[in-house]
Length: 555
Image (cartoon, rainbow, N blue to C red):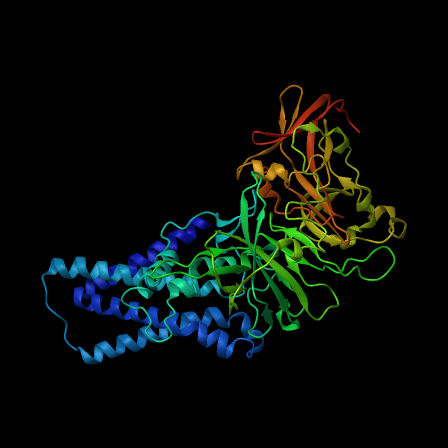
């Protein structure tokens, strides 16, 4: 689908350029200037119009207000300037036909790229799924350390990037604002990335991309220096306590904040671009309770190191308090923090010992409760043979969604995510699900790849592999098997995905991963030929672990 998206972008720009090549160079030039000025005024007015005046006051329309106001403001200004120039300059300027053709086409192409770029940026600030026609733009990488960058297919003609970059350059040169001295390049840079990153939420569209003004408050930033990296080099951290009020909750339910929805903007000198950093860690009292007794009421420290990590609101609490930690360069001076697009000016920072900030935290910056030893060890204990899954017996066929298929009580193909059922004894045997269907001559092999498992795929393994590396289970005869699916069990839900035709070959194909908070079990499902002995599990060139003494026989 991304092919269609890219094709549409190029065709629209070409048609605009072609139209103005027929209108002549002078008309095309006037239109280009009108588009450039309209774009500049849109960037200048939009943030004030949305975040200072309107957002939070229009009810359900708030989900569409930022993007639609950006688009319609631009279109309205273009129409005003076009009508104005047509009224002021009624006659066309006669030039050589070749100049008319080439100049008109060039002017039209520039106007077309800016117009399309403005539409793309504006549409990114509308509540909608992260992916559109196969294109995502920017987000957190699915492997590695969840770094912010391009995800999925790239745009052949990056009109949004070209447009944003042009206006950032203009904001510190010929179009630098005299009033307020707040150039786009230093006060709201890389808006083309923001248009994608704010929608990088759970499952692509389950989180809200904005918070209304007044719903978030921040304290003065604290700056610390620690020996944090693997080589003992000094790292500079900026720590910012943040409080989210009830109005900041996603769709009025629970706050969810991803790494890509928070960014710290540093002070820039002269005409330099403002430095931008995204959070590395966060501290939060998550309200966990002991088996008996009151709320523990103590912060825990977490790392934004994969796509499953979010700052979330604690159920029952009116406010959500968290402390965001950013890793910055030595000369970084914090100026603004942006949370879901809302820009908040920061007070003067102060030097603070990081140890005093995390004194009550239950993990240091490098700490983790997951299995995080070097891969390649014995993972035999994580392997189970057989197609039956006991938990499925608590789910009735009558409640199974239409997106999952079954035969004789065994799941064959599809996807489902359901709440756990009650006791199996309450469901008649004829309606009980039993497990995963297996082809004659094969056996279902289940491997626990949860974070606490020796076969953990989401710790060191994920940081060692490359995007697109394939997951493979091998036997002693060097035959390889790709996962046909997985099941993920959480304290409340049970998720199953099966794709026997295309397999789930990579971590990206899985589309899900167990959280690092514990209490979640994920098993990869393989269909292996009978009569072989398993050898190892690998992802790309990384051996996750070896398997000893596990022979596959029909069962």
